[in-house]
Image (cartoon, rainbow, N blue to C red):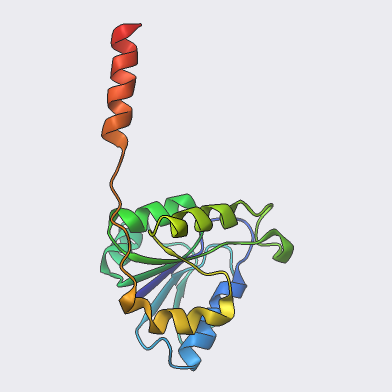
Length: 159
């Protein structure tokens, strides 16, 4: 199952759903696709689309999915990494009115450069990427929280 999250931005992101729809029609995607669309209005006979899911349902889909396709929001990416999911991240772009700036390009680029995700730059290549996703071995995410806690504890103890 593929889980698609578009975030909770107050702007639509139909461009990504159009690319997914095309990949389904081209048979690059053959499994079930579940979408949390947020503010994105999109009609599809091929995808199960929800505006917003209750947190328990969202978590259930995150755990069950084989692939997470998401906007390049840090929270969505981190949620997938913590569950060791294969992730394709597609930045929302200012020029399409999908966001107020292009910071998601930097987020997707950095996570991709480090080997955690696949950065979807060219939406026309989504089908090809999905066909080859089995060959992608994402880098395992390791939380740095323990290190941050030690730094804070040391600071408190010494000041």
